[in-house]
Length: 115
Ligand code: AMP
Ligand code: ZN
Image (cartoon, rainbow, N blue to C red; front, side):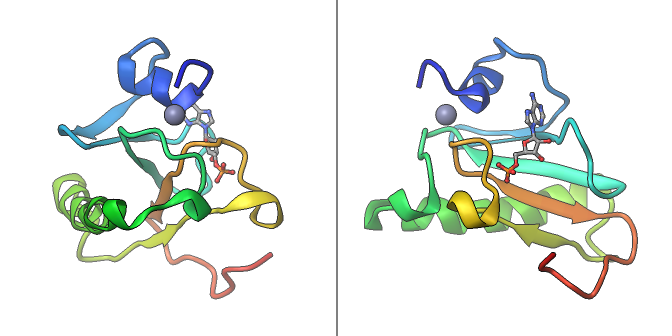
């Protein structure tokens, strides 16, 4: 998608600190980290919101979670654990309209997951 910042990151038109890439998935460090580890994991396919997901994308979403696990092992924080958050729409404060999974870790995170 032409105007999408994350599509531009995937294509290398906007620089990012890449953590992982395969034919379906791209992962990079969040520019404004909310924790010592803050990685964004995104599908290469442009899907604006979780509410746009179709049945044919179920396998892709499953692959995102196994890939997150792979990244956690690769980056050395698998044992300590991590939190995965995906914001959808206005009430969740979704800013970038290309679905993305925040992977947070590197410290004991707060007990509350809602602000
Ligand atoms: P959300 O609020 O769930 O839509 O999250 C969007 C996230 O994308 C935020 O955590 C931003 O810090 C992050 N972000 C925006 N632009 C960039 C960028 N160019 N490189 C890396 N992360 C970005
Ligand atoms: Zn996109």
